[in-house]
Image 1 (cartoon, rainbow, N blue to C red):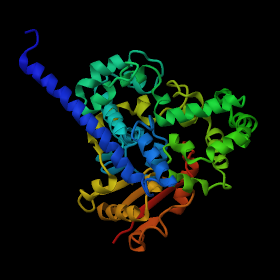
Image 2: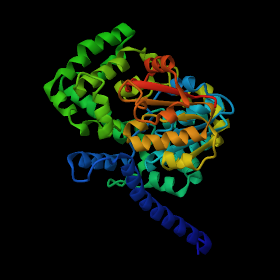
Image 3: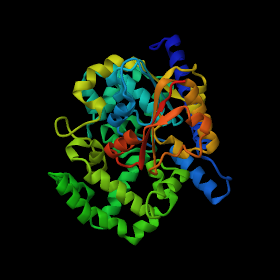
Image 4: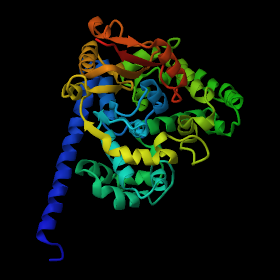
Length: 432
């Protein structure tokens, strides 16, 4: 035979394993996301909305993370020897943290698509030949040989489930990995949401990409005031954004929508206008790659403007040297922490996950955080509304073991270049 029986059997076994495990994961990832989101009866209006969100959230949501890792690292005072537990999301944060050489980073996520993305990013850092190849794969658009680089350098090192995810074919016959031959950041729920925002603006005669011609903050402010701001006063847009499902593309579940709307004048259009104003006006475009993705629909080229930390050439060596310190876990965060020994975590990064949680879930989470936190441990998270959501919802006996850093939290919130959250929050574990 051209192909030996043992090898053929191994390949058939791998194929069966990938298909079986992947289909099982599709079921479980929707179920696990649902457990995190469901708060109402299935056939109620709110319950149906939650189930639609869970269905959409079971696929790829964030091709990139929308929390600013530079602010995260400053707030955490991240350094050598620290043991970090973080929610994975798009994974840009995890690789950024490696520039500070922590001892360990454990990244947890319920979304199997995010797990596959994170695992592929780690293997890309390990096995793509150079920093230039890493940038072309994750930073450049319209690089039509990226899927070939995947086949040659990354795929042989991926676990079967992640490999199946990236090699699964669409109804058009294209493998999923080919999105990296085009523009990966225009995919996922977030990418589709941004694309829809551009279409709506153009329907009203505005091209959001026009802001990229700005030469100064004054130019950016002028473009926002004259072009973008008036769109939010349109009756059609105000009606559309009053529906909770309109923000599912931002990864905002119904419970978080309710929290978000409290930070404005009662209309979601006004909240979105204020967040977009910060993104458009508060930071020079040359310093804000989040604005590049929102308005130009791509990252800048090297030397053109700031890039995510993991794509900056100066950080490549440190990230590659430290990549083996990362563990990616498809798990519930509370259950993951429950498996850790007491006082073994120094830094916790919760992103905005608590906005989804009930009071019982918040107390269960903070019980495990408090148990596993070392003295001086730091917890950071973001909220849709401005205030911290913990007072009045988490047990006083738990919160009394932590100090809320109000001034630092306000400063970090103001400097968060992603600009989409109402508040950034920092808690520090007190000595016993």
